[in-house]
Image (cartoon, rainbow, N blue to C red; front, side, top):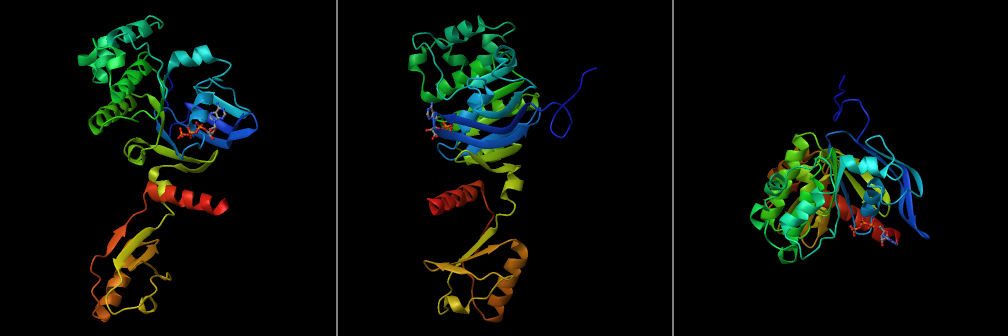
Length: 313
Ligand SMILES: Nc1ncnc2c1ncn2[C@@H]1O[C@H](COP(=O)(O)OP(=O)(O)OP(=O)(O)O)[C@@H](O)[C@H]1O
């Protein structure tokens, strides 16, 4: 019997991380993180510079053992069972080690020779939009094209689980779109994808769930919506002429802050807050010109983390 697994369906998760710690000498880069990635899920690991994302990925890829805690990849220990794990996973590192004198086609062919059951070179190059560059030397590729070659090599063995470390760094918007489409196609075909990125829009576009790392710990895990819930909408408008901050109303129990002539309310419930403000303005014949309500974004969550960090320095 074949067991089907996927998000929400019971089965061995593609990735399980339990209380992972990883140190470099005295310095603890990863400080006790836990999360799971379900089969078929696209999971994005986000974080500030030096948060520990690459270290976490390297432990999952079997390049480093945990200092403590456990990780399981497709139910296996990636450090102890590296060969078995690598057969079923694909890895796109931040810096691919290419022979720059080989052409794109020769590079793919040489990698194919190490793999049993590798996909045809033409198929993979077509998938990443590099067909036209097959005869070009790697040294002559742009940074974005090199990333796509990295990606081609990572999917050569038709992996069940794909690790992508900052897959679109250095790509122009067109190349980024090609990569997003490819990642979405792979996911639609059932591949589990764990990626790290600095582009919050990338996570928002692609990921079923995200985890935000900060200084070796997980600050949040969940769908983008879950991560943003609890972060309030910002309602702003220029302070109307002739009014002082003290004359502004409280809205659903919240007093405003006035920053550089802009009134800022943060609201848990947007529509009722706007209704209160408009009612107050109408009763006083005040015009709320330029009023804007903006939902919290992942960027706001990052700014809050940076703010907290500055406060704990
Ligand atoms: N080989 C190493 N030896 C010593 N310290 C290291 C090593 N690799 C990483 N670190 C340190 O561990 C911390 C986490 O690094 P890591 O590369 O995992 O972060 P990251 O979240 O991937 O960062 P970035 O977004 O900048 O790539 C950093 O402070 C880094 O300087």
